[in-house]
Amino acid sequence: MSFQLPDLSYNHDALEPHIDSRTMQIHHGKHHAGYTNKLNAAIEGTELSNKSIDDILKNLDMNNSAVRNNGGGYYNHCLFWEIMSPNGGGSPSGNLAGAIEKSFGSFDEFKSKFSSAAGTRFGSGWAWLCAHSNGDLEVCSSANQDNPLMPGIGCGGTPILGLDVWEHAYYLNYQNRRPDYVNAFFNVINWDAVSNKYQSAID
Ligand code: MN
Image (cartoon, rainbow, N blue to C red; front, side, top):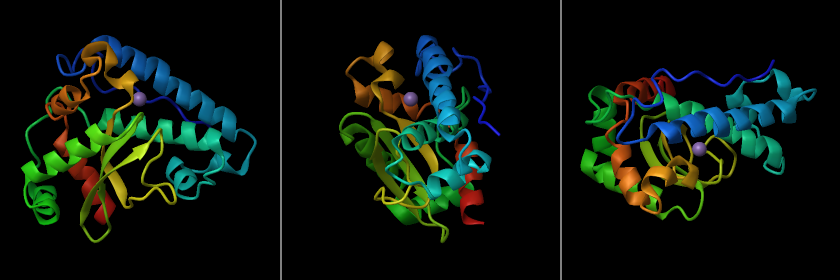
């Protein structure tokens, strides 16, 4: 079995002006494709080759840098495309809205905490919103292509929202203005998709 680069459910230019078409083309067609191909090469002929990506990451040998970097890159970008939409933005409703209020006090407090995690991650990495099985939520960030499913990352639970803060994710349009990119991301978050991931994580 090998992993496949997923198709986007929207066009490359669909997230403009928040995320530009050229960035989406390169990010999905080159970067994510590269992680996918290198992950497949790294697991070919090993005991990992018939496992799910979740299993691979949860039981990862963190010294296996090829699988750590490319397995993380494969998983993280699959999540990233799913939780954005041209019809995104606003704020969540239902159980997820309640969980955000319980864990952070308000949606604005959550947004502030998440934006801070994204803005202060030094160098390349990701900001995360993670759900614990008891329903509680946690915001954190990780370096490079690490993610909260991996052992010892420093935040736990299931990632239900992730923001790529590698320069390749924003530099063409935003250059050094990472905070503007983070702010714009909130206009394209697909909260229905995030809510579905939340329900799956706590069921
Ligand atoms: Mn990326």
